[in-house]
Length: 473
Image 1 (cartoon, one colour):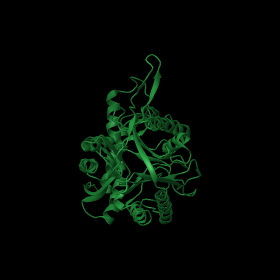
Image 2 (cartoon, helix red, strand yellow):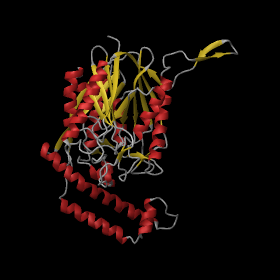
Image 3 (tube, one colour):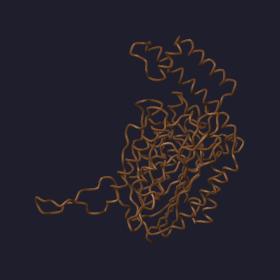
Image 4 (cartoon, helix red, strand yellow):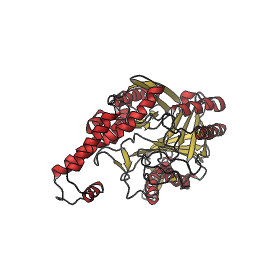
């Protein structure tokens, strides 16, 4: 087998000011400025047998049509077969609206220019292939992400960092995988921004070099949000700096993996090495890729009139609890004093709010479901899963849309692999994919999904099997 080669590139994909921003239904105004640029980052790998590519783009999602457009061009211009190219969205809520065709307001001009930028970066990365070595490291980030459904619910604090160097030791690219919605900024923000992943890039580049492309892969973060003080840009910098600093620690430490690192022992006049526990060098890279379409059960919806009636009844129940506007504000802000409000009233409010959130989100889901039915009628929808192995035991698993964190855990555990990196928002945007328990609990995510409760398990099982198949010896 030939030595591994790698090439990387990046390109700005910031849209013009004055367009709509994606990610919040409550946002009605257009963008008014650029806080920080949006990027597409590309890494191309070639082991002499297989050529593969990974792309991350600072947008809410990349849909099937755009992915097909980019893959087709990448095969022709960069020699990367469609099943070997993984396209990831960072899922920033400060990027452009109009890239997803199964929503109203698709912007064909923006889709085309964004696709052309990405294709150009892929072609450039492929033209820069040179002998490379790859390292994989693990870190942990606490305190910046929280389960947004239950404060003590599961999160995924593991950070993965992939470092790709040339034979001369100079960085070619890095990839950081972390699980948290890029929603530090709220719906009232009208400036284009990559949110906290943008700060991750800046922190990593400050150490590896300003010309080093830094890919960001989000995990199964459907129910994981930033734990922030407020929706302000200083918090974007704080959270991004914490994540980026851990990435830098891992990327810097892992570069010594496989080397003899020791202090001169003055007591014994010996050099006794210390173990690098952060990660390892992939000494025998072997690329392998697989792609599969999985048929997921779609949800059964009530009619819009029935959903609206349930919303009205929920609002009446909330009003009937007798809570003042000021009390409701303090409840929402976590400022209720102990004993101020009856625990029974608070429990009833939570249950009612959860069902109201579910029903309100179901209205939006019903409209998305109707768009899907026009394109793919029936009671199931085929979605893509993908796996890219760098060496036996190390696999990036691309899953579409927004998986709840527990489903990411199921994929990783079901794969049986030492390093199974679950990457969300891959190759298509299909919305939320949730657990059966979340449907019974209510809430936004389970209301927004167009998939049946069993779809999450269907996807997780299929993704785990694919990861195992692609990642085994």
